Image 1 (cartoon, rainbow, N blue to C red):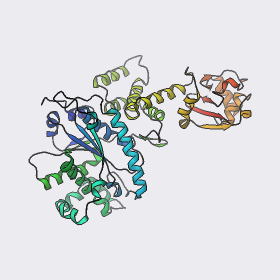
Image 2 (image 1 turned 120 degrees about the horizontal axis):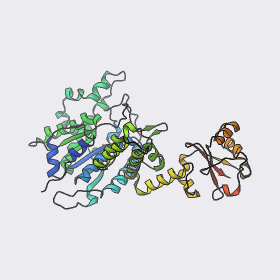
Image 3 (image 1 turned 60 degrees about the horizontal axis):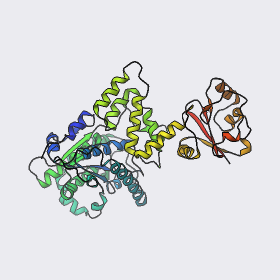
Image 4 (image 1 turned 135 degrees about the vertical axis):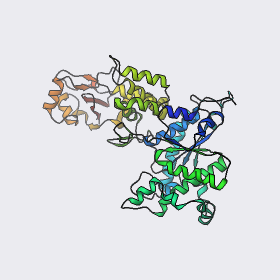
Length: 444
């Protein structure tokens, strides 16, 4: 078998490698087809930006000719992972778990399916593996629902050393806290460890990946495989990637409005795109390396451009936003985001129509006014009655500064009144105060 690119070396070069349980994984990944899995507990109805690194690393395994498994924690979510948590997770009822499981499955399937045939390097013998075989989504409740407590304690529990379990970072932090830790949470690492054992025995999965806070849970699995199966040499591996942090050390993935969801029903592709477009210069190159699949040469060139005179601001951010939106939302989602971005840009020449308004409706404040409250009303008055500005004096001041727009066209005259041709398709119009403050006026 011919050697292929080492997925471990690629991840390390891009800043996506924190720890591996054995350095042998580097060489094995160049000569054998691996089967890697990442777990996702259905604690919400969608995955968010913090989960994206797991999907990206799975995708890198795919692109290097390996197979990917996304494991939905239908069973483990009933317990709650204590890693990185100061309080025990609230218990989820069966209906919520089912709804969350379906939502997360849909997100993972959509993203990995869209990207499963992209940049696949083959199986090492020059053959391209069938793209449908490159990933599978499983649910650990499918095997846990059949496990009896006494059997589990006999087959697995006797191999778990309490001292080792208490030495895990996630356990130590909780035991030192005021809230302490329940026995239920304490067993979580054993459940995740058993998942790896089960997948290794029944599905041939030999690599588990996760964020750096999962190291204890991952090594619980490799240890169980070693103790129970007693294989010769390294057969099961763990790999962790760094948590997604900004340069100031704070978590990346939260906005003023909350989590950055990967589901378009919870966060539009436009808002998703805008979040990445606003990344600071200090973070953008690092995020291009870890969140996109662009060649390192192109990223290095973008970094050089940023330091040259005449660099167009946000060029790197635009590339980042386009690539991540394409990976998560596909061509249609990216086109929707780009069209909305252009349509909402003051001075843009994009012709506004009803369909464009529908695409941005969830992302822009709106109000409904009767036609007699709009037609033949001065723009100054409408700017106040629509809630765009607080007072007529503020509207006049902004107009004189060249910052008041009607349907993206700058208005220079204080006497401007709303005419029938200003109302797009007889239904709506867009008012803008500067670049960011906007309101859609719906005519009822």
